[in-house]
Image 1 (cartoon, helix red, strand yellow):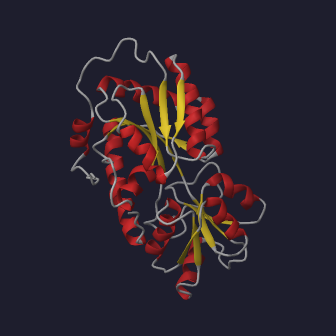
Image 2 (cartoon, rainbow, N blue to C red):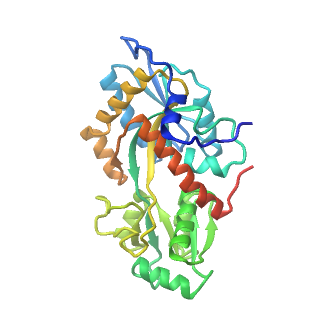
Image 3 (cartoon, one colour):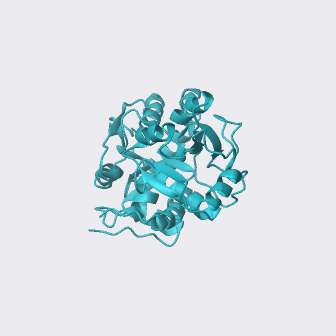
Length: 325
């Protein structure tokens, strides 16, 4: 089994991952392209994948198929893409889980999270939103931190499972706030939200779509978002930094990878196409429903981003104590 290795720099990573500088085929693509992901059908990543696939198909003049391959914490999909031909006809919609978390969470992976993939571009970032049960005597992040400090171990936060980004967000709050909350893992996000509504836990870092309607109905109270700036989906909710935690920042990014060795001209073609796709009004409308913001960069910048996130999130995974054999 190959262990994940983090290369020393984005330039070295890019040289290793991109294929030889051959000219792209004049008629590329001349058959359907697949966008693989490892998430739940109907979930945020699946909906985003279908939105960008629909627009990309128009731009390229070829069908773009969304290929969900869920299971094993996205490692099934990751391994499938890593073993796919480097011809440009298989792409991978990845996020923080597939690389930044799994590289440290899993003791053994059947692929290398850096070496076996070709970065194309970031396509979006989204926040988590900190929501609490209305009975909790904390109206903002500062009051929540103060409450947790006065009652160490008594404030419980929920998650969708050990080692998930929701779990790690809670551990980041522990670390940046200098507090000790108790983690209660559930089998998934819906169960965790149900537990919060029932008063089993005091708080959770949730994705925007399930949380905002409950906040609007007064069933939950929103205290902060995890991104550096406020989100247009809930502009009245301050950032965690505005709440007094200057070191709290957790951006959930999504990006496009290809298998190792895809020729650079094909990578550049996709990089440019996704830049146009994510800014199309139809795609922007879908993004807005999830509080997502379009973001693109160069392949080298994306490679650097993946490496830095693997280091940053790897520290949280170590702090959480979560491991998968």
